[in-house]
Image 1 (cartoon, rainbow, N blue to C red):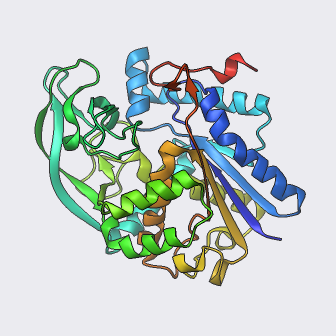
Image 2: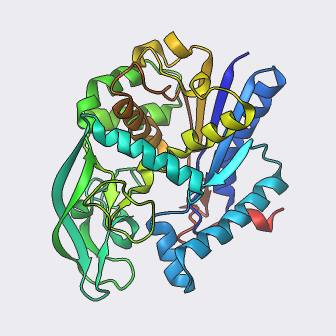
Length: 361
């Protein structure tokens, strides 16, 4: 009997689920049902992504607190997934106290390793709104492809962006041009893991073509270190002295939800966590050798989530574990679906362009 993790992407709790979400996540339920049917031990987990700028923006639009908004949509997600028949073993949320505790403990250990450094960087500020801006609070043009984009990631080419690289950057709320100052953030030194991530990619030739192509592009272009803290009011507090007014970057905490949710299930089932997430022998072993050859992990999401599951998550796991041994099992299978479109436009919650799941059940 094998231990099977299926991690469904965590939808932002900033609006209702749409058919794009369902199409991307449905393969996870099929995989879970298959492995249960053949007698494997399944851990099918997911949850609502309750932090970051997407939720903060919706909260401002609705005149509510981010917590109230995320709790409302989380409850709606639970209802929709239940009515559609999704068979999650645990569907939780990133604002859950157990997730927050797990993430903060993970990051404390991460800071002790050799892959985190402080860096002084540019900080965007809207003088009209009198607020610091980051991620989706910024709009402009992608420096890589020229498409209209938000400040965190370009939907057209999947480029992961920094605030000072967005062309013609403006405030997403009022449209004003930005002023720039300086701030200090913690950075994950992904560049130090280039050889490990290259070997890891080369050992996974059966990933979907889009996952292989995007991940290879990021590596070939030169992996960039990524900020894992943000100047925001809403999110998980950074557990480090001097960073009391900052939050953990959502993509440095939401992907850890696969671990926090699995830890909860393991405790409920009285199964040692190491049997599911214990260390691999290394990327070259395919994530299925050495100390934990009896586990297999599937990650199911849309293609915009590819870099966060093939670069960010493995980097966090490797950096925390201090290398291949004594760390965590790395993702085995990346199930990354293409975008669904509606009248040739990408379906989008934030742009209110979708066929909503609750309207078809």
